[in-house]
Length: 66
Image (tube, rainbow, N blue to C red):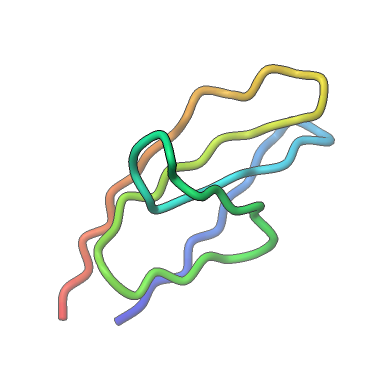
């Protein structure tokens, strides 16, 4: 079944952007609460803060069975 993923960042004032799309034209989302994945996907996320360089991108693959 579906899984819920929670993301966090220890840097005060940072936001988290996430996507399950690949490539340079991926649409990024602002993290506002648990992400529900209903099928296998690679979740990509990074921390961002206005005036600062974005963090390195983190990736994790979820393999969900049917």
